[in-house]
Length: 222
Length: 222
DNA sequence: CTGACATCAAATGGATCCAATGCTCAAGAC
DNA sequence: GTCTTGAGCATTGGATCCATTTGATGTCAG
Image 1 (cartoon, rainbow over the protein chains, first blue to last red):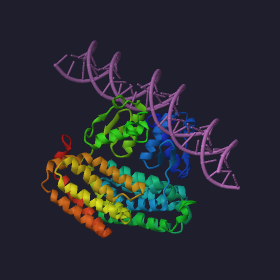
Image 2: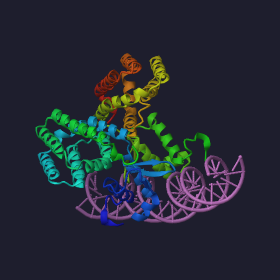
Image 3: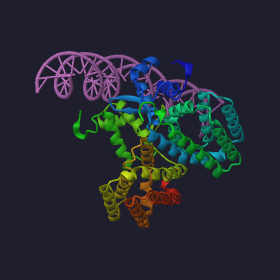
Image 4: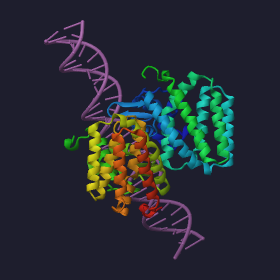
């Protein structure tokens, strides 16, 4: 129909893409209700593809649906956020180990490029986008869907809290992230899965501990 | 409408429940196509709730949907199955640690009862049902959805391969499972999270290694 | 006899209309 | 004055009908 942004041409895909962007970009806050009719009208589609899109996003860890009560943007409590990070500590080294042997030299070069850009920018949105790109690139060749899909879900559901967190701490201890990233890149270059996994786990764990020191990122409800 | 088996009364829930049972009970083989119209007619519903149900089951790791190509029962390759078990090794001790402090004495008693029944039966279907009940009971009080949901997904997507595997090995080394379960129960009774986690991880890991020795469980396609 | 293209059937995706459920607000009783 | 109850409305869930896409079969050319 509108070949303006042809995902697959499917309406439900278009709607899903739009909502996904809106949530990840922070335009929709956690817990915010998503009315089917509203979205449908806004995107010039029927309510049906919106319903399907909301289910897709639920699979991706971006929304939560309650029967007869509608959809909301995923919202995590402090305990849940902590657990999600513990899950990441245990799963992402596994994903990295799966992906690393297949990483090409050009991909590793790109990894270093992304890190350069992370260090060059002080903007929160830049950091969020580039940091996500950085880590997901290292998992690119992890082709086992259950693992890759779970990692994506964990990133998706915590995106908002990373944004708030980065805004809170500012660029104070940003150098730690850079150091961790560079150590990770080095280990990847050396194809040392053990080292890389350890740095990655430490990177996630340190972030988790920092997060736990900032309960204010949950706004009103702890 | 039909209050015969009122899940929530919602048609999509009814369809989802039916398909879930069919898949977990092994009536539908992995990779088998699920035609919307067929299921709709069979359950006396429209195709729409079937579509929604298929999406729900996708969230639960039971089906896979490809746009314009329909739905299939989830199918894992040998590599994927191995990875799923590695994920379980890392996540289930975490879930157990979350749940264990809240486990009541009566629940632990029930745990021992289930193990008794596992040891008393030689039937594969009994084992599958009871073993699932056993482990999921230990995770009952893990209320953080991302973790609990992921664990369920991992169990769901591997159910079929556990069935085939149990059929293949027979009751030869069944005593190992019993020993592991009893050690786990003991650790839980002592509220020793470290011990319990270690036994659990070992239990899953040993199963994974055994599985890797039986590539024939994948039937035609490795 | 083989391969490629066209046509047709079947299954999925989408839109509109209708039903049922949940929420809100106001009115009445204790 | 506050709690409860009922009616009205907003929103989600479901059914039927139509469009689009895919896969297969058959035919024609080489």
